[in-house]
Length: 98
Image (cartoon, rainbow, N blue to C red; front, side, top):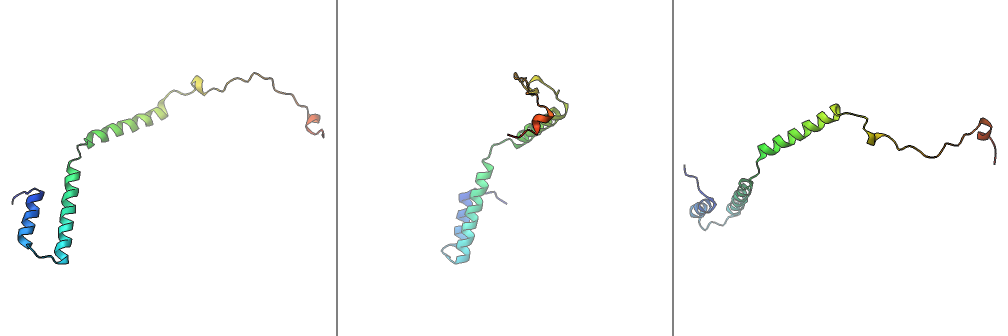
């Protein structure tokens, strides 16, 4: 078994099928070239997926931990004091018309 690059594989196909231009052969050649091109594109991806997975997992674990174990009641959560004094209403004033 020999591992061939894209050009070698396509040349082997051309030698084997030569000038045969049937629809089936042309369709197979299209599928072959598309598959090889897709494979080349996928193998050029140099992303370290294991590291990305570990980083993402650690980030979500930290968010989960912070959600349940972070201190609550910080000063930013308190409403601002209102400077105006509230208007005092009496029972009669509630039902006064006009």
